[in-house]
Length: 228
Ligand SMILES: [Zn+2]
Image (tube, rainbow, N blue to C red; front, side):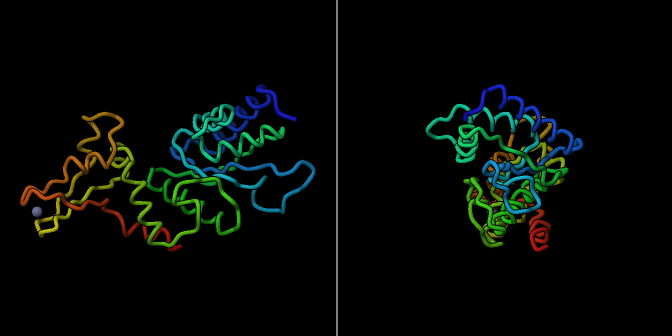
């Protein structure tokens, strides 16, 4: 039997409370949405109070949960698989549950933890509805690192400044590496300024005029993080 909107709203409020309580004020939260399983049919005992079907990370977990619920109540042709899954639960009279997997202090840690949890749950046999190329299947370390670089490049300048990440431009023809501190940009540019934008603006080598290859400086730290 399908649910009333009031039931859905109540569950949303409960999950938001749970998230607020378990996050303990941490700026970034890594979470899983859980399927409660068939009524009367207990799922195999596991670490979760349900079957994980989605992994995400957010700096605004309560708003993120609201968005998951809203989008699932108004499906459109290009909505994500996670919303279809939630909509299917609603249609069967069931409500999603939530697990707070981890909290972190920086965006990079949060993205890393999301990747790690996504891969961990996939390897444990859970079918996730995530559709990003980094979580939808089990992938190699090299691919993970490449994806992490990609995800981090869209982090906000203010977040990069907070965690001390620097942009390094390397010129193909051997001009000296140039280091750009996102903190220099975070203060005076738009709040939504992303690291990749700064990198693009500063990409041209003053020596030869060619576009440099850029990266974020703490790559080794990241690969070390994945080996444990
Ligand atoms: Zn050059």
